[in-house]
Amino acid sequence: MGQHEVTALDDKLWIQASLGLVMAMTAVACGGSSTETPGSQVSAASGASGQNSTGGQGGSLNLSTGAGGSSGGGTMTGGTPGAGGALTSMGGSPSTGGGGGALPSITLHRCPTTPEPSCPTKVLERYNQTNASDLEGVTEVKTALYIYQPEELAALSCLETVDDDLKIDVVSPSQAVSFWPLRNLQKTGGGVEVSAGLTEAWVDCGFSRLTSLGSVYVTGGAIDLSDLSGKLDLSSVKAITHVRINRSNLTQVTLPSNAALTMGQLWFDTNPNLTTVDGFTAVMLTQSGIQVTGAQSVRIVNNPQLSTCRANQLQQLFLAAGFPAADMVISGNLACSQ
Image (cartoon, rainbow, N blue to C red; front, side, top):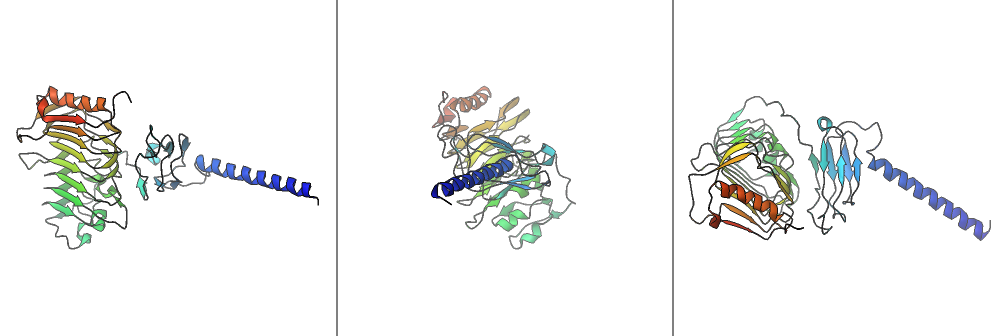
């Protein structure tokens, strides 16, 4: 066989291999084979730009850690909402392309479209931070609850009520943490305080059923959250006094709507990936009777991807409720024209 014939054969084999690779990539983008079962995982590598793809019937989406695409990741849809819903992952900033927040290194869940059935009632008088198994199946804790270990957090899937403060300070450098176990939490007598340090921690549908904070305190209840990644849904909340989201990796926060709220503070401070604050429509705000001299009622600063126009809209709601303009600060956010 001559040299020209060998070269032609090599070219033909290279073309066949390339076509096979393209067909395989196309099959993955279209959601795999028709035999894929509900609850399957869809795996996505680092964010490619721009494409929409349909992803099987599955219940969870596993995104490996990677840098964002040039226009931010695309959208992957996994069946109907009842069989898996849709999950959007942003792999980069729409304007700059590289940042946008890290992709999860763990499998995230699709938030339930309807509430799960309650667990059998199990009341815990007090948790002494001794044995995480004591929290398994618990629906109500009668006192304050403090959580410091990932295994303690993982045991809380039945929890609906904490009669006092809930504080979670989970630091786990060796593993990522999901707040999925708190998807059924509905009420706290005090506030909710969450931090995770440098731990990779994801909201993962946690707090999405929360309706009331601070019922046992004259000063009301606050949600103080830092370090978490993902999307925080507070749309079901009907009673809360302070919302303070500081130094988080959240990309989206949904505030309550269609509610009468007695509030003192709304803070979004230094959230580099926060692009969207939804909600606060048809809301009637009243000033909290507990005023702290010099405390800022509205503080929306250093959120480089959150529009200043949206920050101004939120400020106007507080101004209309009679909060003094001197106690508000808005700076360091995305210019309205961008």
